[in-house]
Amino acid sequence: MRVACFIAGVVAASAVEVTPVQKVIQLMNGMLEKGKKEKHEEQVQFAAYKQFCDDTSVEKARAIKEASEQIESLEALIGKCEATIEKRTKEIAQLDEDISVYEGDLKATTAVRKMEHNDYQATHKDYTESVDALTAAIAIIKKKAYDRKQAASMLLQVKQDLVPAHARRVLDAFLATTETAEDVGLDVSAPEANAYESHSGGIIDMLEKLKDK
Image 1: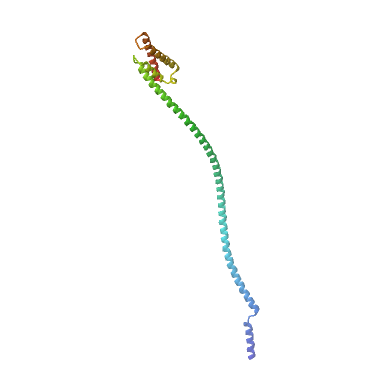
Image 2: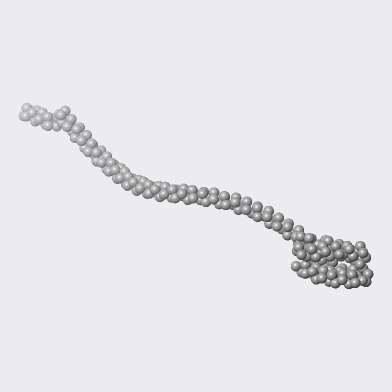
């Protein structure tokens, strides 16, 4: 009976005891399960990262395409602006040249107008003085007994270049006659005096015509 119990105890002990090989197998199985778990976790993490990379790649590709199109558009705009700048620069240069010419023309025209104005003022003054002298001479000559020297003095104030050639000759003859009359004392009643007075009437008509002109 004791022997049977001993044998049974040895067999039971042998059944419970784990061999080294079994321990190694158990350890390897544990490592396998752990590796599978870590592999799964890494696969899940890699899938998420891959999705992120794919999404980012698509977004970046789209952004690059849009930026490239914008660059092309801006380059075309820059080229157009450069052409416009070149054109406007030439136009500005031409306008500057035109302005320079116009300023020169304006300066020359202003100088001419100033000279013409001065000439007009001088001519107007001459005409005014001549008209005044003619008016005074006519008034003097119309008197029956007038001061011939005074009349001659008034006529001498008339600008000779304002009087036509024919009228100048008549005036010169009248002035010469006036001097002769003064020398011989032709201010008394005589046939010569009557002729002289008749001659004076013609002078008055001519002087009045000159004055009207």
